[in-house]
Length: 285
Image (cartoon, rainbow, N blue to C red; front, side, top):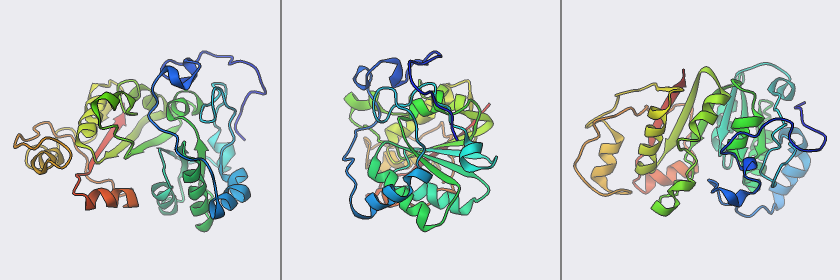
């Protein structure tokens, strides 16, 4: 199984921009708000019966979502084999990761989430589908990427529909920002892919800019879907989530919809609300 310390302080430096570096979650804004953690009914039963098998047990550092910086996830020991590892950050209720695991039995999946009921529901789905290639972990994503995962161990990292924090005063809490890209790059193997999706145009532009500014990544669709083909141009003209205007997006760089992403209930709500879906894909160079 995965390695972890018995006790005591960290024996190696804690990277900057992870919560453990600050000694408290309140020293730096995090990208999530903890919702209710209470489990009931089938979720409670799934957790009681199966979390020992499917939830990665990790030592904590500061709080119940922090990761002790000495803990290292051993995917080969956890899954009993060596296979490409795909990490989904913010897996929610597990719709995307469980669907992907069913469709790709030759790959292993790690679902990272802070919301306990979401993890329990993901475990329900894992058990219902008799899957052996999915594990869940309750943890703060930057710490998973910067210390828990061995460097270069992930074939892909997915960030689908993270909280947009759309009010300007809250933008600092967005997960995908300039300090997040190096953490993803560290976790990815050379040639690995970072996939993103959002239904907020402002966040989509920020994601695109973060990838473009990073020397660790190249846009797999650089220059594509610009002008009249751009989802950003469409969003500006509908004005659903941004100021309406006719100015076309000349930069492009948007990916086609990732066919490995199942249409979740969350994304379906976005479609019904008339929101534009943006996909991006960056390769680790």
